[in-house]
Amino acid sequence: MTRFVDTQALASLLARVGTRTFMAELAELMKSDYVRWHEFDKSARLASHSDIGVIELMPIADASQYAFKYVNGHPSNTQRGLSTVMAFGALADVDTGFPTLLSELTLSTGVRTAVASAVAAEKLARADARTMGLIGCGAQSEFQAIAFESLVGIEHVKLYDVDAAAVGKLERNLRAHTDLEVEVAASAAEAAERVDVLTTATADKAHATIVTADMLSAGLHINGVGGDCPGKTELAAEVLEAASVFVEYEPQTRIEGDIQQMPESFAVTELWSVLAGEHPGRLHHAEVTVFDSVGFALEDYSMLKLVHRYAESLNIGEQVDLVPTLDDNKDLFGLIDRQLTPVKSRTAA
View (cartoon, rainbow, N blue to C red):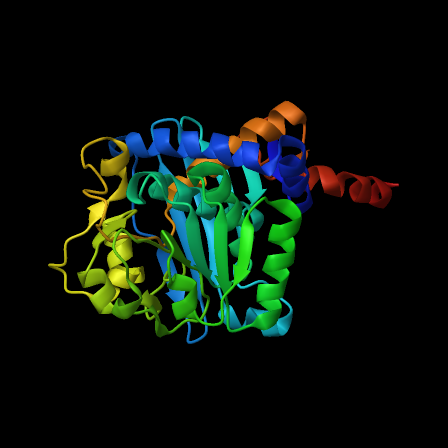
């Protein structure tokens, strides 16, 4: 049987475990998986693009477990009553191919993306970082703020979005569920003033320049979350040129990240090498660093493992016959034949 965790089951799991506790455990698991970087069979995600969005498959495997994620990105979905990002995924046993978990990954993606941001910021932001500007107040924003408060030590957050309703939503949620000091900025430039970390999490599929070089300050760490497909960027090229840039998986980020606008010779560092101690990360207090995050399958692999562990121990979700259990493993047709038996019996009578 395969464990199935839908959206309500995942929300129940997070409520029972505690979002901050879950994030802390996921951060440690994600770091340990990144350190095992060379043990994974990796590839850039397979993407199908349209003028208004993208649908992607994200596979990864080590010697024992295989994982994949299906995810879309359609910024105009909010006008149709749908989420911009929707996802699901699976975890399977490598030795047999048997799927052990089928899970929603929409809510999970919000959690894992924020945790990946915090894991990177622990190494790339200044150790005394306490203030964050947050540009983009959509579905990802609460998770980013909570992760940076609980895992990085951020105490003050400045919010900005062109959608005033989104700002109001985020401000209410943060005041109700965090101890953060919350300030609303009048512009993106104001959100970037006098902050230690600047997170961009906008949704438009466009070559935008949310952050420009004149918004940079000594020692700033930029957490670029919103640039995640070809034709979509948030950071001006001059920002990247002025910074040390870190990525998850370079072949994928070259296609989808903010560095898609840079020449192939532009140097970047993969995050795993920092977590494994092969690269120092931030070199000095005044350095400007950028985490050009597009999301990588290893992060979903970590998430699915932790969801499966908790779902099994807390008996959350349900067991489903995703693949057949057969008395005779060569008689797949027997599944249909058994359904036909009552009909054949009535016909014979």
